[in-house]
Image (cartoon, rainbow, N blue to C red):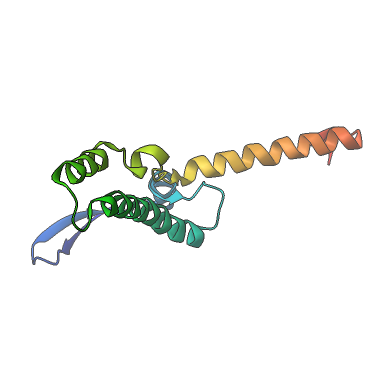
Length: 134
């Protein structure tokens, strides 16, 4: 079904209404869920922490390296400290932590259904009955 509606810019726009089935399919493909195995709130906190800790470690490492070159120090010693600081790899490179993208809702639902049927089959085998005769 098509309707004419006014867009926020004042133009007339042709709008196609979606059926509930189309909305459901779009929801399964576009909506995403956290599959990492922890609460979504803790994931938000963990992302900030995992981005913060390597930077903090790099700053601490830099301060420790440059502490050898403070005060009345020869030019060679300060140059060596700077070269050593620049040649060390960042903690970002060493740890290799990256954010994991969330998974589409459709995949989550399929996994849940597969897990549910596998559980029903296992429990039916234990009980000695066929899963379809419940």
